[in-house]
Image (cartoon, rainbow, N blue to C red; front, side, top):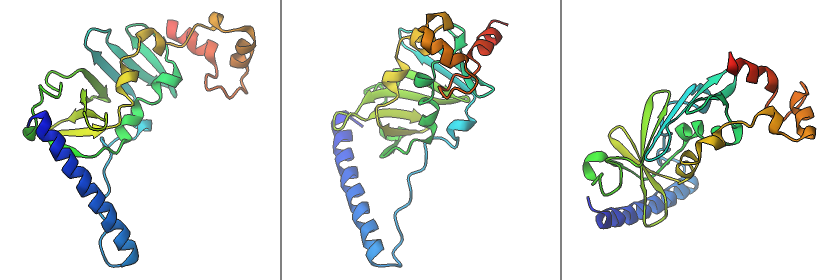
Length: 203
């Protein structure tokens, strides 16, 4: 399927989505009509169940992370406590609800930059391919198995960030007032026990 044909198909799908919305509203007025089926999440995994993340990026360093005792750690290309601001959104991709979706056999994968993909992501071993963005609304093509989904483009810019940004800064790099907060066991900054975890990383 060419990009132009895909764009037309996408326009039709938007119309169908609008029709589905109208039917849903009608169902509220006329009890007895079946509501449209809910869009399932991309993976049958919750973000909390994900323990391993790997990212293969064209022209950039490979990234790998694992969760230990509730904290995310970078294990490649460097080792250390991961920056929670950058790492936390990644597992949430598994719970994203993306529409529309297409069978792989219907699409021209090379034209969508899905073969080879721009980026490969593994969540607990489940592989997700990232392609180009759609010309109509900027959503990005994601392939999982034999299905291609159009999803909000929130994850690709994050996953192509510099590797160094995914590492939490060493304690000595923080200003003095923040060091006191980090060392405070009652702190609510999300990096409790920072010194102990930094020591564990070196073991």
